[in-house]
Amino acid sequence: MATKPIYVTQPYLPPLEEFTPYLEQIWKNKILTNGGPFHQQLEKELCDYLGVKYISLFTNGTIALITALQALKITGEVITTPYSFVATAHSLLWNGLKPVFVDIDPLTLNIDPKKIEAAITPQTTAILPVHCYGNPCEVDAIQNIADKFNLKVIYDAAHAFAVQCHCGSILNHGNLSILSFHATKVFNTFEGGAIVSPDAKIKQQIDQLKNFGFIDEITVVTPGINGKMSEINAALGLLQLKYVDQVISRREEIDRNYRNGLKDIKGITCVNKSKSEKSNYAYFPIMIDSDYPINRDSLYQKLQEHEVYARRYFFPLISDFPMYSGLASAKHVNLIHARIASNQVLCLPIYPNILDEEQAQVIDIIRSVH
Image (cartoon, rainbow, N blue to C red):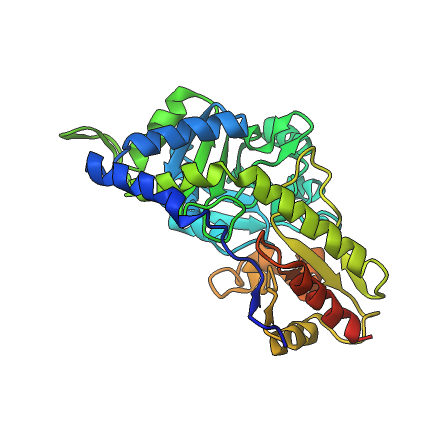
C-alpha cells in the first residue's frame, strides 16, 4: 500500500512565495481580465519559447478548439480520431459538424494517414488529428492529403506543448494548432488553453471570437464566445514557464526509469518512444496483452488497491459514446486498432514530484503479478 495516493499526474506548482509578487501586481493594476499586461506578456513569451509566430490565450483548450473551427469557417464533415479525450469530437458537435472517425496507427496510436483518403466525401472540409500523448502525427502525409483535396487541418495539440519535429515546433503544422494548459498538463495555468496561428490576420479574428465578437466598445462583428484567460491564470503561466525545462527533464528521467523497469516483463509493452526531435514526456502509456497473466482492467484495479491511480486513456473510445455510436464511421469493424488500444492501454503515473521509491513501487506491483 502506498504511503500516500499516487495519481496518474499531478500539477507542478512553483514555490508559493514566487507567485506572490504577481498577485500583488494584479491587485495594483486592478486589471483582472480582457488582455491585461500579464496576458500580453505570456503570449509574447510563449511565442518565443515555443517557436511560433502568433498565439491567442484561452480560458481552456476546449473553448479554444471550438473557436478554431469557427475561425476557419469549417462546415460539413471533419475526419478525426476516435482515440482521444472526448473534447476533440465534442468541439465538432458544438459547431454543428459531423465527425467522421478513422482508425489509428497501431504503433503511434495517432490517426492513420493511410485511412484518411478513403473517408473523404464531397462534404469533407477538414481533418482534426490529435498528437496523442504528445507524439507527433505524420504531419507531412496529412498535409499532402489536405492539399490534394483542399481541406483545412486543425491539430488538437493538447498534449504537445514544446514538442518539436524534424522542422521545428510541431505547433507550426496545419492551419491552426490548439493547446491545453489544464492543471494535469506539462505546462499549466490551472485552467487554460491557446490557439497557435500563422499570421496576424487570423489571430485578430480569433481574438475577436474569444471576446464575444467585439472589435470596439460598441461594435460586434461575429457571434463570439467568452474565452478570455484571466490575469491570474496568465501570471501562473509566466511563473510556470521559468520551470518548464526542469519539469520536462524530470519527466524524461521518469520515462527512462519506467522503460528500464518494465522492459523484460512478458505481456507489457511500453508504447513506442516518441520519434520527435524534442519530446515532453506528457504521459507514460503501456499496453497489456494476452501474454500478461491478467488483463488491463484487472491490473488497473490491482493498482488502485495499492492506491496507485493509473488511467485508462482512452477508454471508452469516443465513437462508443451515445452521441457518436450511431455514426457509420463508429462501427467496430472500421476501428480495429483503436479498439485494441482502448482495451489494452494503461497510463502510469508520471509527474515531476513523484518520488523514485513511489515509481519503483508502481513497477513492483506490475512485476508482482508474474
